[in-house]
Length: 525
Image (cartoon, rainbow, N blue to C red; front, side, top):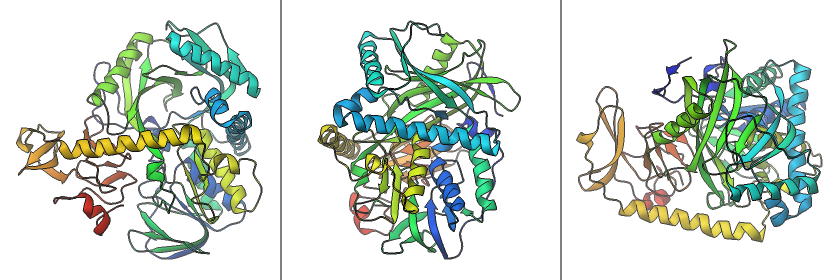
């Protein structure tokens, strides 16, 4: 494990969950397939869905554009809880008490499923039952927490306001939700992967899905021009690689946050914790492979590609917070993650568009993917096998609540237009030759806006900064050494290759325009 002393953050981002487990490897797909179910995406939703459907006797295959568990799932905090920030009062106001209660039940059933699965299969994944706390340090959010506590009472949620708090933080109010959990997510899912393989399931890595041919038996098309025919397609790719006519790009935005795994001088109390105030601080403990306790410090969220400061400053802010509250002996890992937020803050899970029962989608977990992703897999199992589920209407992507959906639709898409225009007007003064090793910046080259990165060997890599999704201009993320799109959250390596969609094509090395997104084969739109 790559550890660093206090005062020096690890040079490269790497999540704790990826450094503490040996992962299986799988070949890329090089043939056409016919299966009952094709699952696109190998995170918690995809792997759990594949495992459940294989248990139903179905022929299931999973394809992953990168490596298994290397997306959002591999960059999580791995809290399993129905306490998703301050959400239940808002849901009651906007959608009604029954909808808010259903959301709580769906996430608690997901938690119960994980606990039962771990117990029955004897999975060694550090599963621990804990209480979940949300706290405020300001009067404004203290009042919001009081309203949330009232919502807990209305919904019969096991929890309420508490007087004590175990950290040296001047809190104004604290709300607890009882009997939640935390675990080691990749240990858990690696075990499910093994069981899925034993049941005849197949997994293919480095296999990029690019489109779907719809019909009674839809076909997933891959970048390598292979075809996968199935009775059902499950799109579990964080941002949907295929949107159909669902217009998901206009109905979600990407939000980014940062994490440190640290060795603290003070012992960590029982519980999982998150602040209601901005900037968010999320806390939990983990145990490394040497049996040492580490603390995960998470927060500093902002829209992807729209950080108000250099992204390394977010890591430094978390470091300062950790030193103040715990005292830090060393910083073991640092990483960042992003998740998608829907118009009404409920995930989209179900038919990709109304009347397409054989193409199902799960997205928009708002950083609470352990419970929502598992709830999605349980719903997928019921929908594929023809069973009724009381949660189908709750999560359906075709729903629309006039408030807040309409307002947020207008706000978010105005933000996209603003970012699009802002990027086109940007005229940076930096030149490629100004860059130090390991540095990237937006530069001007021959009068054009370009992205430049000088690698550790001194070689300069130039890319066009026009995102290959809808043509917004990407920005440099110094903390993770990536190019990030401020419109829909696409992310690219310093040399232009796609890390995270919705873009499917790499950043180009020639002059690329918005028109190319609609007319060129290089377009990911």
